[in-house]
Length: 362
Image (cartoon, rainbow, N blue to C red; front, side):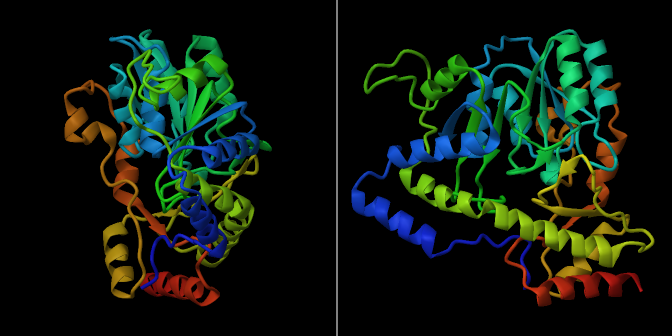
């Protein structure tokens, strides 16, 4: 079976973990601080706070922005549920926005309509879906024009660039995830990045039971800390990120060349202003379910990210305005299919995937 994801853990990561285990310091310590500093440097942000997952990174960030009941945050309708859940966790309400058909990212024109219609929107929470950067120039202009926060969920976009600048460095704050399927992993883990030292300190308190030092609890907080074991893995993975992303891009370029021109198959958008890091290589087809079943029978793993738009999730149905429509999000949810693109793919495996997709359409 060719899996949709295959985390690459080498001897370097194993030795780094063993070193931490032998040190006796397993919880958050020196390795976490080193990882925070290294990752902040990579993205170009001044402050970084490591967390136990991408979800806790989102929750910590949203809970430290000073949101009040009645505040609303604009989020894409087509993404993983944690993006919207984090808004709810802070006592605010998510406002869903439709996506662009060819990028799967939040549509700037639809975002403008939402901001015009709803003065309670306090921020825009973008998602750089599948590793493709959002239209950052347009969203920076929108945030300035309407005086709202610009936040980035870059959980799937480690090392992605928009006009030469790393995603995660544009807004007031951003988050990343290090789940095993991501471009680099710590097993589980996340990171909050910001330019604001006060916000960074609030996040650090929030993930540490609200305590600046042991048993002195100044604010409500939780244990969302990353361990030194996870950080040790992350430090080694970070060294490999350029090679990992380069291999993903190489695999994607082969798909782009070999699968182009197949009727009924839409390939990912390649934007000259962006460096796509292909967390997922996601095609579109009206025959999605049949193609997925065919590939599964041929021992090729695929993924559907995401089969249900957020506004249709039971959790959010009653929170969504009945007059709103999300045609692009709904259509995408019925057509998207991700093919294996991870750096562990062999040339033979990649060629086999190409051959099987072509065979299906013959």
